[in-house]
Image (tube, rainbow, N blue to C red; front, side, top):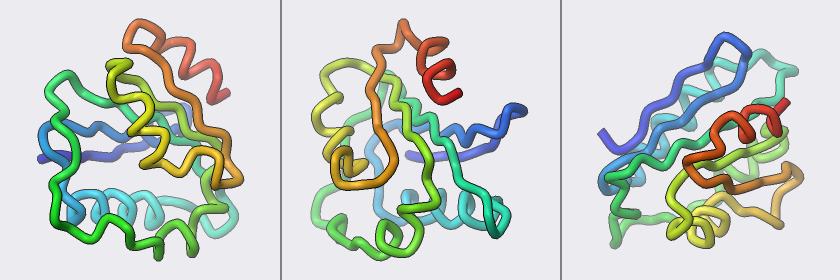
Length: 119
């Protein structure tokens, strides 16, 4: 599977992406995350870009903004941890600079700093 989501004991939602990410996988983790939030909760996300991540499967409807419009304000912060070669694409994919939530990229060696930043 290209994407999984779970909530850790501190309440941070941890998303792992690997292989070639498909839109249907992304939709599934977004739905699971929203289902797990209380009606007034905001989510803090830690996105782990795994070593074998290959990017996004092309030809799919990645420009669907429905989730962003409906739930974008329910995300408080996004930390992304991965190989620096994915930084610009991941920041663009997560809508850094276009959403209320701050988004920050960390190299794999700075996982603890990413957790600290999420607070």
